[in-house]
Amino acid sequence: MDDTDQRGRQPGRGTIRRMDNIAVVVDDLAAAKAFFLALGLELEGEATVEGSAVDRLVGLDGVRSDLAMMRTPDGHGRLELTKYHAPSSRDGDPRAPVNTLGMHRVMFAVEDIDDTLDRLRPHGAELVGEIVRYENSYRLCYLRGPAGIVVALAEQIK
Image: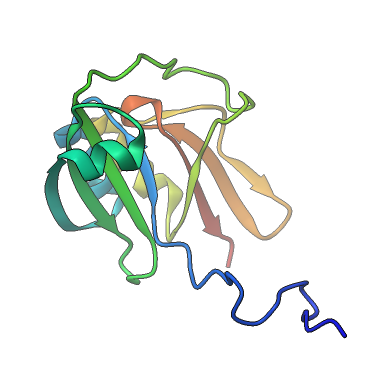
């Protein structure tokens, strides 16, 4: 007899409890923090990490990095911004198209897209495409932030 539930899960067997955070490597931690603070995230904490446990965890030697944990106002979502001081980071393409394999984007629900963009532009935000209206439910846009991070914004149409 199979104990799986309707979603194919077996009780107590590696069930995910929640998504804890998304981590993004940045080249300028101060600029990235300022960008996400302007977006409306809150700084939860900062730390420097290094040592053999960190090296073993990430599969690199001689790691030293600074982290800033950003939290959404509702307290449920977290974004970890990571600046590697050692070893030096490999250059990526911060302008890679959004359909690049492994490309990521982070989406935030906002009250007012136009106001949010006005707050983010002084921090380097640039629209990837256009602000579009999706049916009668959302205004949406993609933008690039620090280190080429793709951020999507969704404003529910009331």
